[in-house]
Image (tube, rainbow, N blue to C red; front, side):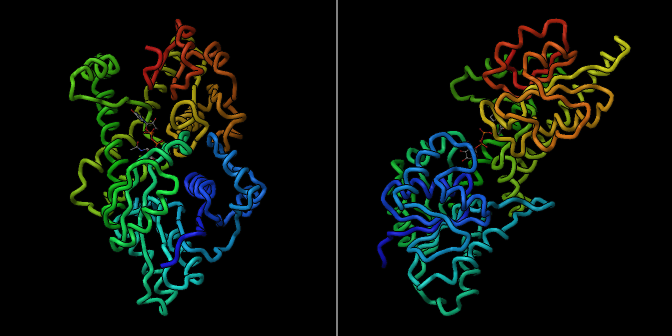
Length: 413
Ligand code: SAJ
């Protein structure tokens, strides 16, 4: 068995690039691979094409030291880590085409005893499928001692460089020996516990972690609807209930965003459509929450129009998918702001997001949308919609006297 000295990391996104950089930092020679020439050029120049604290230092240092480079084609390596996206298709079925393309790209380079790791969040069976694709391209390696492993990432965006080191890892191998080999590779930077299992269990573990959170957020979101009907402050209620030593209810919000929690549970639903009932219901509850917020904003704006005889000015505070970051992916706040702009064509929608410099593409070109600082939005608006509990918004609640306030995060209560 070849000792692992070189690693090719395929997919230099939010997970692949930090993983590549940290492996290089720990003495391995790492070749990053990406389909985007922009990403490849940025990495080779020692730069990071997205925001993640501390990552830029790691990339710059390791590129300068010659331990990290990037290319469009997959080179030869002792181990391969596939960290490409696994989105879902229109019917919520997982789209494995990026994994298949990565497998086809690396297969020609194999000699027969490499370690091939899938890190992409995947439905059960995806690692076996990747192995099948590789053996299809390389029938000559049918009986070769290739090791296949699934090792899901669990790092929180914004804390990736810390959590890569401190989080425990699950390593699922096609054989126990494959899992042990991958464990030794991750041990080079991971200080957490490394737990060994088979591929399907590892795949499912990642999906279950994010579904656990989704189901619990759905519980909080359902409570927020019930409490609105019952005239109860949901945040006070949750705060009180959480004093019970075995109760820990999460927080309601305008919906669930990001590229993981709103996606991964569907992979379980797709794998077990008849059985995954709570998991499906949680997705539906969380996906329905933005529309509920929009209906409340519309009712408040209608009320202003009735009373004042002019269209209401609506402020939408926050566009990111969670507080204190600039990440707009799958953000319910962004979708709510865009839909409000479309539905309130006669009204002005003042949008504020202190973590980005300009209106995102989804809001550009809408004539009734203005991108303004939060204080100004609050001062000018009749209806103030708090969509993200950024720290920067904390004190603004005091400036909303006399306005209609829809605080979807409970930040101002
Ligand atoms: N949210 C609520 N109420 C809450 C907590 C979160 O509405 O009480 C919302 C957030 O506002 C956001 C969404 O849920 O829109 C997701 O945010 P998050 O902070 O819960 O999670 P992510 O998507 O940033 O990262 C998750 C993490 N998974 C878990 O905590 C189980 C992270 O560890 C994973 O690595 C990541 O998904 C991933 O890549 O899968």
